[in-house]
Length: 106
Image (cartoon, rainbow, N blue to C red; front, side, top):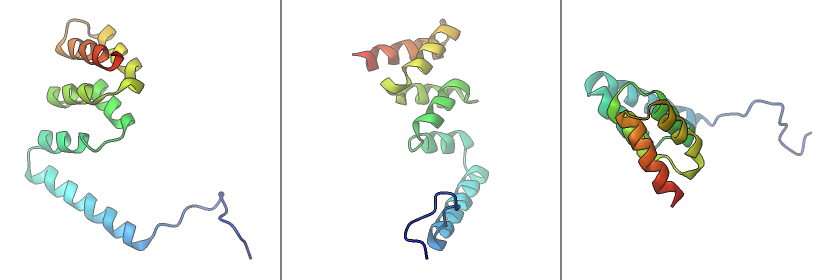
């Protein structure tokens, strides 16, 4: 009989959580098929973690998504903003990154 959780064992997923995740996935797929994917991605970006927001700022296909992601980055993502500003200094993304960098530094 074990008294504690074994960290080597995979975490058990509650059936309710699994059903909720399946519904969210189904809704996402439905939205991508029936709506403008760019709008769906912009909506998802608002609830993304910092890693995904940084990834979108660096590599998103849609310019609007990249610009929104750059605008959402915080001080902890200064290195990403700096990289965008240096890599694309005269583009709208580089200018947005410079502007956001100034905002988070103040």
